[in-house]
Length: 246
Image (cartoon, rainbow, N blue to C red; front, side, top):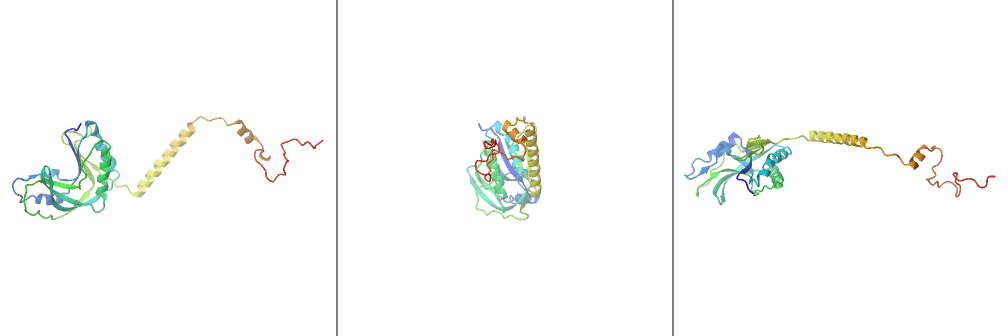
């Protein structure tokens, strides 16, 4: 069952990039339908929810993925026309020079796929609106083109992701230095070792076998009869009585 709710994951735009995109709308012929300015964002992933039971997974997945990704920067590239069954769309493409965006989108897609979500694997872009057919050239972009990515935004009109949370929120990306990660790993390993030691100490002690106790109590100056001494003459065994003695 598909519930009538869209889940959209995206990245908010800085004010100067938003203003540059809004300026591109001016001069278009009548018939264009534009996205609201506050809804402009780099779309990372859009999907319908496969069922009510899967909705709570979205925020949990976002929190886990965001904790593994360091902040990065995107660059506004160009405007493009995108022909779809819904009509001709105007989108702004973004550049991912470091590959961080591709890794983030792949991690989100794989994690959410486990909960039944699906989405077309299209390049990340900024949807500006639906435009009429025209041969006019697209306007050029000007001004700042840097988009710092420090948080993932999610919104799902009509239903909360988790009870008590708003339908629109952000999951901040975090950066954990290598030395901090190593210290956390060492601390976790020490805690596991201590816990293992406590569990082993709580186990009941089994009595040692009689043979082991006997060997432990035997004076160490006597040779161990269970060990073959290759230096002793053949047939000479101190533990056997001497038949030649009278």
